[in-house]
Length: 96
Image (cartoon, rainbow, N blue to C red; front, top):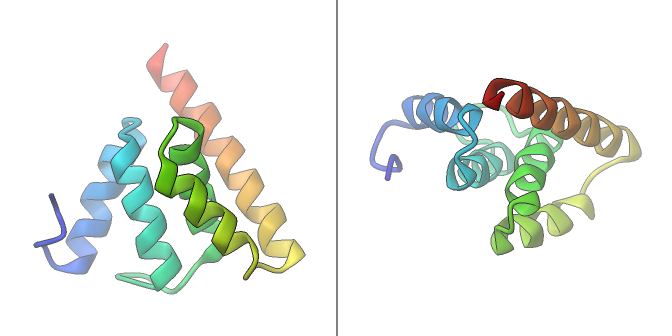
């Protein structure tokens, strides 16, 4: 697990693994963005990462996505959905 690293390094490595479709890393990135660890708090990014994890059956990803949704403005929700769609599309392209 990368949680032993300094937060900025963990954010980087979780990002690398998430880009390779690692579900746990997508979830962990969601936590980091939701809590503002190593980056400013970003509910739209958290929503996007939790959505990717939830789409692959990550139970906590779904739960956290649904919980963060309650804290988001309509604009943040729209941005989070757009980011989730873009990331998902990029993951599909890279797996081909």
